Image 1 (tube, helix red, strand yellow):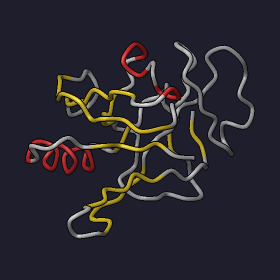
Image 2 (cartoon, one colour):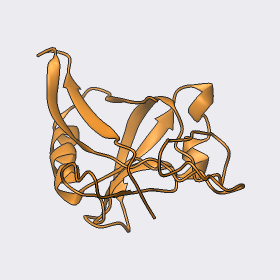
Image 3 (cartoon, helix red, strand yellow):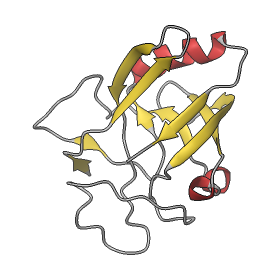
Amino acid sequence: MFTRVATVFFVYDFKQQKVVAQNVVTHGACEGFEPNDTRYEKAKFGNRVDSHCSELGKYKIGPRDYSSWDIHVKYWLEGLEESNANARERVIVLHSWDVVPNKEIYPDYTPLSWGCPAVSNAFMITLDERLKATKKPVLLWIVN
């Protein structure tokens, strides 16, 4: 299940006022309750439990935890808006996935998730190092 939709994860450093890292990230297939025939061309979003959609909005990146995916690290995401209020119940977490490439691969495809922002194993290692090193809350925005 792969898509040509280009989605990018940016790490922005507010002190330096610039993007300090970026890489490919998945979005949700959004076909939990109805067919999503455009899932390969355009991201669709939603907050419904079991929808397999990504949820738009601001999140606080929460505790680091064990993941059954790839490098076995995940970060819980706390939805801060009505558009992502079900993130915890849906287990929408930031994690790695071995089928996510570590660079843009157009015109080939990148995978679709069940709603989680998933990145390559190598990029997750980079994110994990940064997140473990910070003592302040970190925000994540999912935008369309």
